[in-house]
Amino acid sequence: MPNKGRPTRQKRDKERARQQKQRDKAQHRLETKQQKALSGPRGSNGEDPDIAGIRPGPQPLPAQWDIVEEVAEPAEENVQ
Image 1: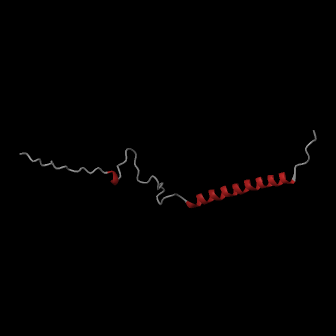
Image 2: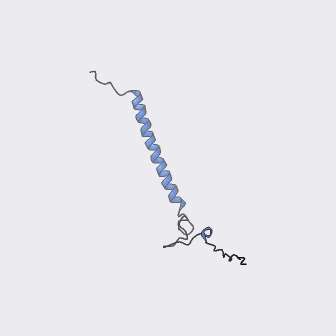
Image 3: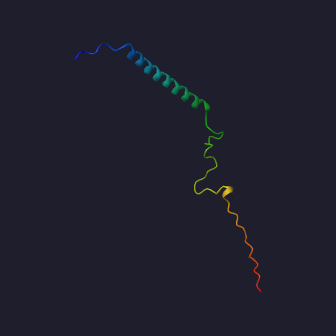
């Protein structure tokens, strides 16, 4: 069985591309981290807007779920 030769040019190019991709990803992570640090808190008062106004315990039902009870008037029966 013959021994394998030196790594091919294609293999070196592939390894360089992988390393470049890792560097690009690291740079992107660093930029994202800096952007988040500069943006500050989410809301003007530091409260998360997704949970603003929610208090512990059961929440009130939204207006569309309010039950409106209709008063049914008794049907007039004709008694003869």
